[in-house]
View 1 (cartoon, rainbow, N blue to C red):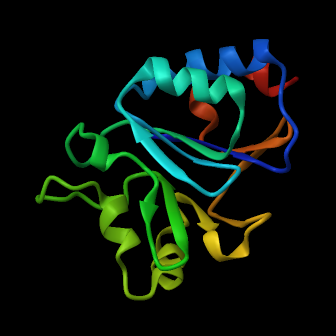
View 2: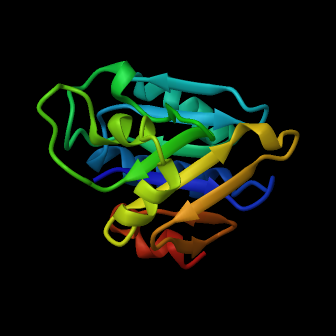
Length: 166
């Protein structure tokens, strides 16, 4: 299952913590990366080297590590997915797909996105980046999130207790 980090504000964590977070998470979630920069630009890559460079620089609002539980390992299947509100990030498996696309891409195209998120958020976590709220975007979180070190964390399973306690 994927991992998402969401910054609470513009503060950074120390480089040692950021490296540990990246390394711990990447081992279990190596199938792609995506983020929204502080300026509102969305990016996707399959390159772990590029992703680590961006993650450590911390010039992002939301950062997603992908584990391909549904959909093929392709750059276009990485988060974020454009939606009516801006960008959708998802942690969890909402349903299996047969079309080669991840469930998150299908959810992002829902006619009533927020109703669909509410329906699925008991066992999934979502972050919606609302583009129209710039210069400081509104980020809404749905589902159960862990509060740690100035960031929200979608899945503590891939984050060591050592780092979470800092």
